[in-house]
Every structure is written in C-alpha cells, then in structure tokens.
Image 1: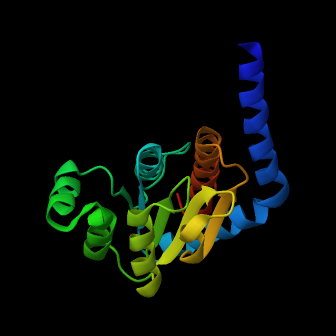
Image 2: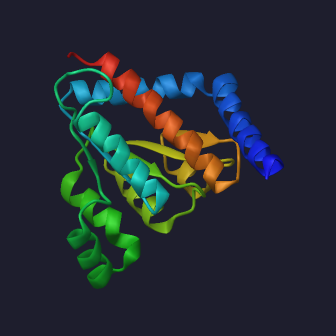
Length: 189
C-alpha cells in the first residue's frame, strides 16, 4: 500500500514540477488575458464534464465569492450547474450541444470561455470552444499531455504533462487556484 501511495504522490509532484519549470509564462499570460477581459466588464464562462465540471464550479465559486480577499464579485459562471438546461438541451439537441447552446445564449465577444477536459477530446467541450473561438471569445483550455483537439481550438492551453486522469485533475485544480489568486490580485478590490 505504501508503494501505491508513494507512486501517486511522486506522479503528482512530477506533473506539478513540470508546471513550475515549463508553464509559469503560460499561466501568467492566461491570467493577464482574463484580468484584461474582466476589467472591460466581461465574464468568465467555465465548463467541463464529470470532475472537470466540479472544477468549473469550484473556479466560478472562488471568483464570484472570494478566493482569499474581500473584493467585488467577478462575473463567472459554470455551465454544468443548471440541470434543467443540461437535460433539456441534451434531450432536444444531444449531449454534444449542452455547453454550446448555453455559450451561445450567454457568451459575447470579449468574454472568456474556459474549457476543461482531461483528455482534450470531449466532443461537447470542443464544440463549444470552436464556437467561442469563431465568435471572438477568449478561449482558454486546461487539458493533458498533448492537448487533444481542444488545444487546436484554444488561444491558450495549459497541457498537464501526464495522461493519468486523477493526476491531471490534481494539477488542474492547482492551476485554477493559481489563476484565481492571480486574477483576484490583478483586479481592483
């Protein structure tokens, strides 16, 4: 059992060490783009499936509420939170449309569309990100190793150097916390 625990922790540390060594500039660039968008009165629209949906909700809560400081709320929404929207869209249009339809209703040029997919190949996330890219939204993705199809339709992509889903998700939440901290510090309180 100790070997299994050690292996998991070592793999998690390796993924985070890669962020430290190779992705600080990318995280800084993403945070800067989000801060600029928020300062212009735009919102952050976050989405993903399963654990990535939970991460989207977590990020939206940190931005609308607070991460560390008392400050004005930051306009952020997770598209996985409205079960009526999700089930109606999935029933009437198909599961591939659940984020796209919501993004079309809520997103506007200059907003940030932040898609999360550990594989980088979630069809519903890709479909929404393609639309966002074509319609002037700032596209940011969190994914794994090579980035999958999601990387190709995103202006900014943080690719976690692992293909182990739990490890990727652990690194994603670290990136989300770093982004929330940086965004919070970069806006007027």
